[in-house]
Structures are given as structure tokens and as C-alpha cells.
Image 1 (cartoon, rainbow, N blue to C red):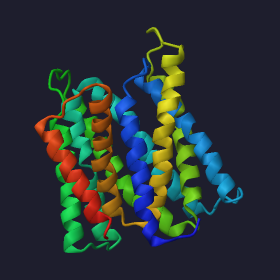
Image 2: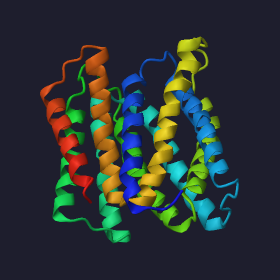
Image 3: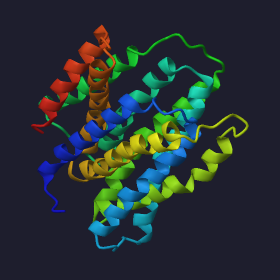
Image 4: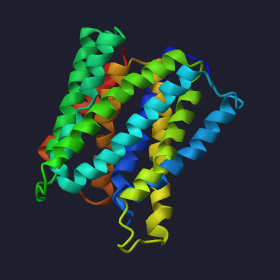
Amino acid sequence: MPEKKHNWLLYALVTMVTWGIWGAFSDQPDYPATLTYVVWAISMVPCALFALANIKFKLDVRPKSVLLGMGVGLLGAGGQLALFQALKYGPGYLVIPMIAVAPIITVILSAIFLKERVSKFGAVGIALAFVALVCFSLSGKSDESVTSWLWILFASVVFIFWGVQALVMKLANNYAPDAESVFVYMAISGLVLIPVALAMTDFSQPINHGFNGPWLTFCIQILNAIGAFTLVYANRYGKAMIVAPLGDACAPVISCIISLILYSHIPSVPQIIGIVAAISCVLILSRE
């Protein structure tokens, strides 16, 4: 693919849409969360094969490329596994707000290590992205109970891993000759952690093997994989401090709209504010 700077927004929009649809339907399958991770890791394989075909199977095997690519994948996959544990000990309405603002780490680290800068107009767009994140975090239900303080520990791991991941992804893209190699190593690292997910699974409990179990899970998780694929391109051509908050802030808008249409869900006031902030964010950052 030709490296054109203006393409970053298109890739970011694809990530937003696929992750938004994924978010709206991710709770539909009747399947354990740890096995959902396994299916997600497997769903990365078709996208990785497409990526390899796109570069005619000439994978960048230089040690630094392998190290950075695997680092991106392990940070993402490791954060996903930590998230399962955080939700085991604490309620989603506490866990999600904490990890939702992980892009703030990306923004700070990108400014320090990558020397990325944005215009004052772009800074407003980033601020609106965080407004949207906070609004959607506040809209969660609060009818769950805290079973252990350990949720803070695991949620902190997710917060740090996912915040650093976007920076490492940018570093990997800056070094590797193509974005496809970065994604392939991401997919490999996801597969590497499958044994850990299996070890975390309670196989003494009944597991649904019907269509609304692993098969429906795969159909939904492939959307996540596609979004991760285009996110690599977005980070390659765009600034990490813009791409990270943009993707995380606007995907919930898609999820909310789908819920509104399919489930007659009426948005709360925070969600309405979040939708307006996210749309404004897209319009502003599209000019960067």
C-alpha cells in the first residue's frame, strides 16, 4: 500500500466502525470470557494471512522488528487477559472508566519520546475525545458489587499495557518497512498466550458449543481483528497521540447508535454528551 499521510483517518474510521459494531454485539455469545480470548486470537489469523499475502510473504525478520512487533501484541493480549481478571474481582462500572482513559498515557509518552505535536485546534479535538471517553464511562450501570481490591491491580495493568501499546506500535511502524509485518507479529503474540487463557478457564462449568457459543463469538471477534489490522495502518500514517484517543472515544458512539436502533435503548445524558463530543472530535481531527 502506498504510504500517504492522509490515509490515517480512513484507517482510523474503519477501526472505529468495526470496534463499534463489535462492542454492540460482544456480549451476545454465551461463552466464557477466557475462551472468547482464544477465539479472538484465532480470528487474528485470517487477517495475518491477508497481511502476509499483501507483502508477498516477505516478512520483516530483523530482530528489532520481531521484538517491537511481538511487544505490541503481548501488551495488547496481556492487557486483555488482565481485563478478564479485573472484571472477576471488580464491577465493570469501576474497571472500564479506569482503563478507558489509557490513551492519556499514549499522548504523554508520544509527546516525550516521539516529539509529536498538534495544533491548538487538534488539542481541542483530543480533549473532546477524552470528554467522550469519560461520558461513556459514566453511563455504565452501577448495580454490581466489589468482591476484592485486586481489581485495582489488574485494571492498572490494563491501563498501563494499553496506553504503552499504542506508543510501541508507532515505534514498530517507524522501524519496520511495512505495517503488515507489525500486525503479523501481533497475531503471533496473541496465539502465544492461548495456553494462559486456557489455564484460566474453569472447565468444570458447562460450556456452550452451539452456534451462539464459539461460532457466534468468532463472527463478532473477527470485527475486532479487522479493527486491530487497520489500527496498525492508522498509527503508521498518523500521530499516535491523535489515533489512540480518536479510536477509543468514537467506537462507543457506534455501539450506542446500534443499541438505540436494535434494542430501543434511550441514550443517557452522559451518552448524548459523549456522542456530540466524539463527532466533534472526528470533524476536528480530520483537519490535522
